[in-house]
Amino acid sequence: MIAEGGAVLREAVLHDPLEAQRIEQFVASRKGTLFQRPAWLFGVEQGTGQTARGLLLERNGEVAAWLPVSEVHSPIFGRMLASSGFAVGGGVLGKEADAIILCRAAEILAERLSCPTIELRGGTAPKNWSWRRESHCGFVRLLATDNEAQLMAIPRKQRAEIRKSLKIDLQITIGTEEEDRAAHYAVYAESVHNLGTPVFPRSLFDAMLARLDSDVLTVWHEGVPVASVLSFYHDGAVMPYWGGGTYAARRLRANDRMYFELMCHARERGCERFDFGRSKTQSGPYFFKRNWGFEPQSLAYASWTAPGEKARNADPTSKRHAARIALWKKLPLPIANRLGPWIARGLG
Image 1: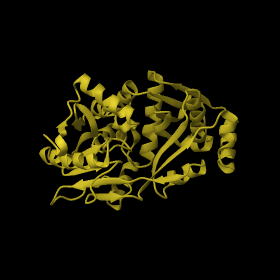
Image 2: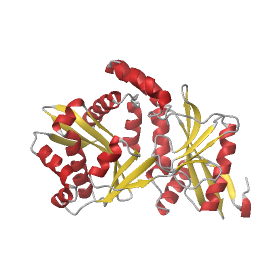
Image 3: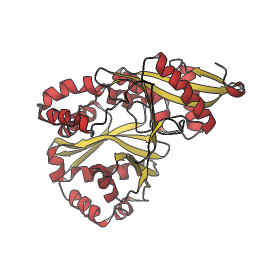
């Protein structure tokens, strides 16, 4: 399709290795996010079955703008295009005018694919789309120059908790081997079950570890994993992404130890920033991150709903899902772990 000014607008052929590499190079040259990379979309597709797609705007044979998209289908929550699936970021990478062109093209693509909803987790979108500007905040700050400076950079109250954790007999492992993955999944599955949330399929974590610069840091006590986090490394930043702790982690201050150890590990790897990810505004995780000295930055998310359709609601904190969450918490963990991945792969 020819867009305004002679630009070419088309759907990307992501499974062509040369096309995917070309887009990877564009994302890197524009300092795009981890979630705008084709590698992220492929990880989602391989791990959950949600199709990797994307829209390109080209001028003179060169990529001018790129919109990464996961085509998400859930038997419970319906169909949508997400930019990007299972991500806290995404959206169009390119100039504002080009972003609007790609968003309008995404509306057409969504209707063709029978997806009544589009969700953009960042970037520019048309003004007549629905916007959320206060629902979530991001937390990023620079890493210190050494371990002691890192400790001293943390506010006094939280620093005291870390010092206590350093006196407890805890062991730290970092890696991507089967033992690391199994320990992480066991801890993460228990953690999200305690919150009333179905666990993602382990295949998603395995796919991401295989495709992206990432690792697993686990805290052990007496041979048992009590806290674990799968983190990504991108453009000089570390992002602890899928992490959690068991009931014992709180008593052992294992989560405090985990994040401090990750800060030190990331600096040794050459990272300059610690990206604590996003949290719902005024939530428990929001205040936890503030206690570490991170200042919240409001995030803007845009969404489109096809005419005559209801807006998609997969928000686990909404009143609509409160009863489901309460019921899920009561399920025995083995049953929740068996059913959870089937549900969670459609959350997007």
